[in-house]
Image: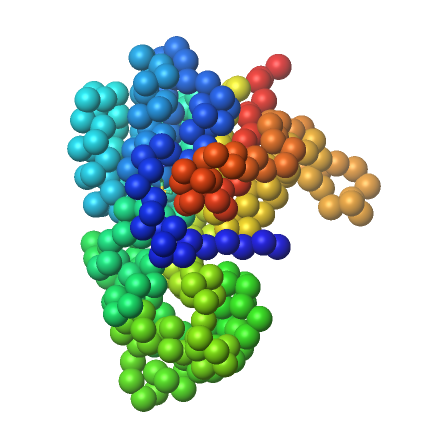
Length: 324
Ligand SMILES: C[S@@+](CC[C@H](N)C(=O)[O-])C[C@H]1O[C@@H](n2cnc3c(N)ncnc32)[C@H](O)[C@@H]1O
């Protein structure tokens, strides 16, 4: 399993406004006609702009759980606003709500997961590990009372912390790090990025590299925002929002996200999902659609050189089967 996280240099150097793998996204979505598209992670609005510019009569439902991202996307997409409906919320909850009236009505959907470079650059959010930054990391900002990264580090038990560092951060010294967090927080609660870096230094017995820190900060962020849980809930709901022939494109930046997408696409593309020991098929007995990417697509070297943020991107696409 490979895992990559952005170092601060990469996060900051990302002044590149081309959205990640934009050409491939458009090739799969092929915006056309009066198609309605769901951009479930509108962020800075780059992909939404590409979709609407590619098709003059298409519309987009643009979702983000970060109110600030939505308002900035609203500003930068002002010229196209008459074809966009903005919705604030997590894509798992929003897709559930949309299913009530709009099941089967989207020609395509996009999930471009993780955080935006805007969020990484905002010191007050604590997503990147610059020195002395408050440990917040909530994508929803301070709009709700959800626990912050500091709350998680100060309150989670040792098993949960070990699991987060090991599974989300692939940290070989996860157990030591979890114990060190507990030892330190008894003396003084975790408050800033420096506290987490100090605990990591002790667990590793050396000064952590930028990559070590990036992995651990990303792991905490994934836990704080329940990112994998939201993805697993949203995938089948977004599938059900697609019309026949509609396409879902997912860009992920973490191996566990990519795995969840791969397994979902594999299951939806299988004609039988019964356990092997069952003598007769008792499931739906037909595939729901077809995976369009046998392996995940990666960005070209030129894109990675221009936009380091794209380095860990993996794109998968799936299309709903046409009704016979
Ligand atoms: C990589 S950025 C998207 C960039 C965007 N495609 C663009 O072209 O500018 C990811 C965005 O997804 C949002 N996000 C992450 N998880 C989310 C969730 N569960 N529900 C809604 N938005 C989410 C983040 O707040 C962030 O703005």
